[in-house]
Length: 357
Image 1 (cartoon, rainbow, N blue to C red):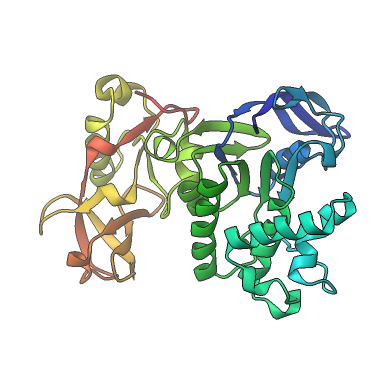
Image 2: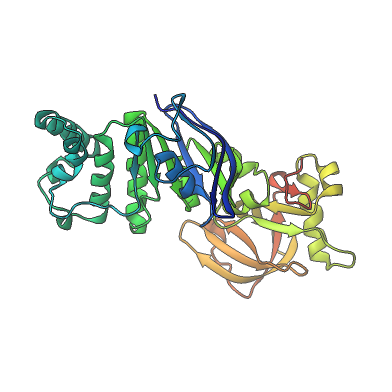
C-alpha cells in the first residue's frame, strides 16, 4: 500500500501558523515532490507525515488509518535526511541493519534484508566498510539502504542530495528514479531545487507560505503555471515577465507587449485584462539582422550547447533572458539584437498574478 491523505492539515507555533490547511492525496506508488523556497513549509509537512512534528489540526491518513497520534515507528514510513547520520563505529551492514536489530529481528533475517537492499543499491562490496571510508554518494546510498530494509509503506526524503556536488547529484537523481521504479513504493521528496523536482516527480506540489500553489505533472506546471509564483519558480533561467506598458511607454516595450498578447491563449480577452505577460527563455528568439524588437545584450553566457543572453529592452525594468542555439554563439555583450518572441507560447496573468486564458 502507501496511500497518504492530508485533510485540512494545519501547523501552528504559538501564534504563527506555518501550514495553512493543506488538502492532498498521495496515491499508492507515486513519486511526489514538494518544492518551494526556504521557509515555505515543505519540510514541516514532511515531518508531520513522519511523526516528527505534531499536527495542530486536521487529519493525516496512511492507507486509510488516521495516523495523527501514531508513533513514528508505527506509521509505516521511513525517512532519509539531508545529513547521512550514520554511526561511525558501525560498518555499512551494521548501520543498515541497526533498526531491525532494535526491533528484535533475527540475525539471519537481518542479513538477508540488508543483503537484498545492498544489491538494489549496488553497494554490496561496501558492506564491510566504515562510514569514514565512503564517499558522500556512497554514504547517502547507505542512508537510503537503512530505510529500504524496514520495508516501509512510504519513503520520505528531506533534501537528501543537497550535500553532494553537482555531478554526483545528477548521478543520484538517476539512482533514485531507478530505485523508485524497482521498488514501486510511494515516495515523497522535499527539495528547493526545481531541476530535481522536474526530473524526479510523477507530480509536483509547489509550496509557498504554508500553502500549495499548484499540484500536477511537471510539464503541465511548466507549460501552464497557475500564477506568476509557480511560473517564476519552475524553469532556469527564469521565465520572462513583462508588465503591461503604461501610456507613453517606449516603443520597444509596447511592441513586445503587443506581440506577446497577440499569441497568448484566449488572446483577445487576455490582452484586454492582462497585467503581465510571460515567456520562457527558450521561446524568445533572435530575429534576422535589422528586424524584431531592439534589445541590447548586457551579458552572454556561452554554455557550449547553448547560450543564455541577458537583454535590456527599453522601457522594461528587468533584464530579459533568451536561450539560443549554438548557431548564435557569436552574439556577445554590447551588441544590439532584434527579438522575435514565439508568441504561441506566451502566458498572460491578471493583476493578482493568476493565469488567464
